Amino acid sequence: MNKMTLIAGGAVIAALGAYAVTRPSDDTTAVATAPEPGAAMVAVTLPETLSPEAVMGQRAFEAVCADCHGENAAGRMGVAPPLIHKIYEPSHHADEAFQRAAANGVLAHHWSFGDMPAQPQVTRADMASIIAYVREVQRANGID
Image (cartoon, rainbow, N blue to C red; front, side):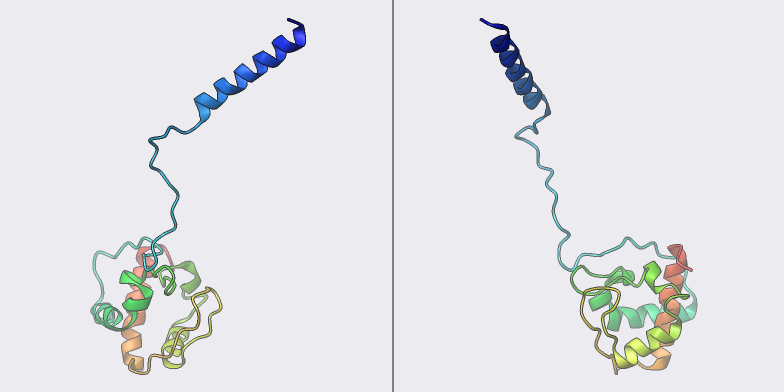
């Protein structure tokens, strides 16, 4: 045998050995999957206690907003964004922005969920309580 044949054969054997060691075994079940539609988009930590106004807001949120914005305002994949997110911090979206979104609806601009329709059944007083709830939960999650 000449030197080239030995070198080529050695390279093939080394490559096959490396493949055998690094390839995934057949019993692996870890497969990257997309989150389920409707799943929560963020993990939310609730405050230990809520103010009386925020308790009323939580009830109103659950009745009107949670179907789209998710439990505890965590958002829902493919449905609506989380309100417990830095985009909705008071310095970027003031309380009045929430009031106007409920009263008039809002065109999609930060997320690609589509436009939010107006919620005419929600009064300004309802929204004030909902905002109190959202803001208290935001603070519990480091969003000031």
